[in-house]
Image (cartoon, rainbow, N blue to C red):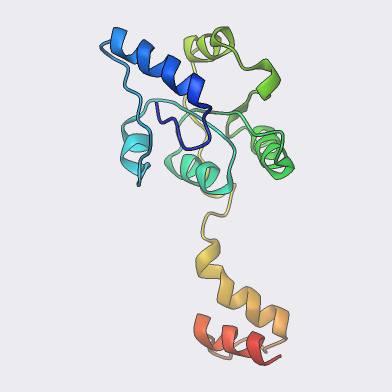
Length: 154
């Protein structure tokens, strides 16, 4: 488990004590690159930040998202991905050891493929979207730098 910087100190201390009593449980304060952990995981339970959801979807693994209700876009994003059948959502008010245990105990089946259903290649599409926004005719070669320069001069 990765606690992250926003986990309350009391909760973190309680989890540290629990981790010391269990051989298959490790609590990490911070991970600079979560990708290796996600690669090794069978399932993922995470909050609903933009980067987290994109990373989770890119690995096409069963995921449970618990969005922060103080950040409305997390709930909107999570619900939309749930509507597409790409992940499960648990409202923070319903978060409990029992709810997590129930989710982990059920057979997730094969995760639905994300590719083709969600475009995860936004970075490569930015030059074209900028060119469209600026009204640059199709067929005129654009690079990210030239499109950005046109935006800056507009």
